[in-house]
Length: 239
Image (cartoon, one colour):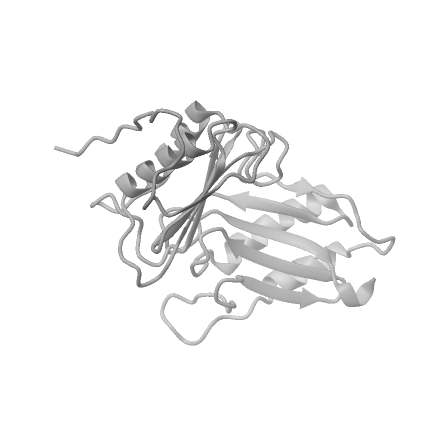
């Protein structure tokens, strides 16, 4: 029988000693019911802990975004640990129910997220190209982006054929006017293959033409909570 987890609302008093570092820097409200739904969208290992190596997890629901940052080597972080930390934030940041709670093994950051946030807002759709306003009069040449996506280098000779990437920063490639980045929210290796990224790039260039853009998918890393974003921008050397 699977264990059950319940978020218990604590009385709104000051946090007690030994609760770790709590700060309440935010001045906009994160609805608690939205945060509870965001928590339930986290994918845990079978023992209800965060998958080893997932150093950053971002989830959102409605107007609430939760970021969990774990420390490698500090021990497993369980779902109950996260629930306890959320309760400390709700209890200590009683005006907005948004704040940051940090202990040795992990940090929880709860804050309001506007519906129009380009990555975590409630209006964001996965697998959809989103175009941004140009930051320069010089255009991005779509053919440069297409060529750059087709020429992403393979990392080593391993059987998985992972694309070459910088740990924690993702995949970076310059192709004439086009700067290409592929990033994973949980900072783990990206497992999307070149053909998938070429298809994503085509959607971006078809939609955005000479303007920068991006697309987010809810998969594509070794971790259970990976969302991967492919984005294009003007090569800084071309500005």
